[in-house]
Length: 150
Image 1 (cartoon, rainbow, N blue to C red):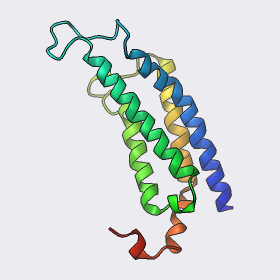
Image 2: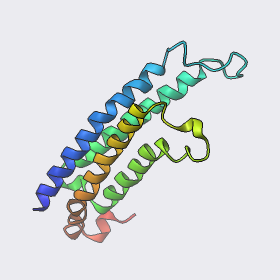
Image 3: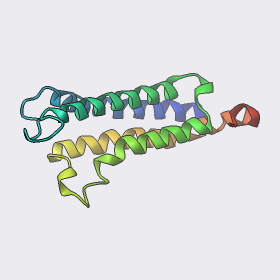
């Protein structure tokens, strides 16, 4: 039954990441877009926003790869520590979609379609992580404390 939970978790993760590729693609499209620039008086250059979009896209790609490696890797990739690492990674990846909006409304998604994509791309992997939690924590019973301590 627990291996079935991991399979379900993997499927949910992949579904969320596939949905999220639309948002990732939109971020990449900002790079080089002449309408996605700052005012010319900005001291770091009007195209500095491209740098931030590119940096975000590469960070997002790294998060996706780490999640996939952890979920799809061998049993040694799934420990309590890696479960918490995934949780922290997901919070860091998905929370910025919403945490600023109550304080700065301009930080909201530009339209409802983007908001729906953000909700779905966060929902499926997060549920997948919690569904497969037992597969991450059962490994700790097989590994001695010395192996996973710092």
